[in-house]
Image (tube, rainbow, N blue to C red; front, top):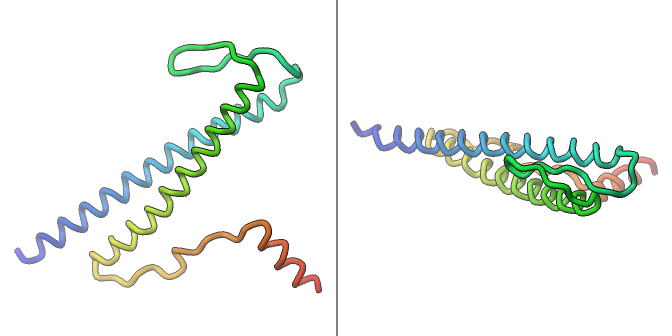
Length: 127
């Protein structure tokens, strides 16, 4: 009976973790579809003109340049939201491990190097 609150805490943390992961996957699918559409617009041989854009269950003619700008802004917004959710996910994983009485994961909070940092490392390694 004493372990029941701890079990509830673990379960609620786990359900939050699963929901957050699912949301990241959904946003990533949307981001990939946007990337495919942007690539198709880029490959389109017509320099200008209108393109058909799907909004929900409607197709609308929009200028190609406007569509590209709109999709690039959406892409940036999706990238930002996915990165924020990944940061939250790290915190939630640590809370779950804490609730289970385990040590925090080592190396889980690492961030990738920026392109500028990679250039500096390559310069140092080359001599």
